[in-house]
Amino acid sequence: MIRCIRWYQRRISANTPPSCRYYPSCSNYAIQAIRRYGAVRGGMLAALRLLRCRPWSSGGIDDVPQRFSLFYRFPWSRAHEEPRLTPLPDDEKE
Image (cartoon, rainbow, N blue to C red):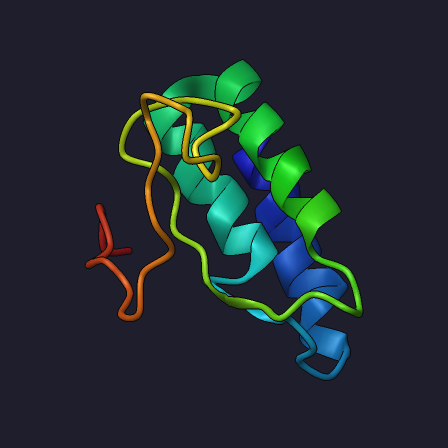
């Protein structure tokens, strides 16, 4: 899956102007989520992130959650995390 995302970044995303409302970009978020939680769980988080990325979204910093939960943005979730004002350091440098 990561190879497919990297292909997208090199072939498609590189040829279009930057338009991502979130940091990190959706493709980088997907790679981080897949590395942290595996293909299935990370893929679900990446899909939810793509659903949040819409023209009327305010955007901002949206890091991969530290604990896996599809509902980590809701206050009633055990894995709730408030949106950050500064990004977390990358887990792995490339």
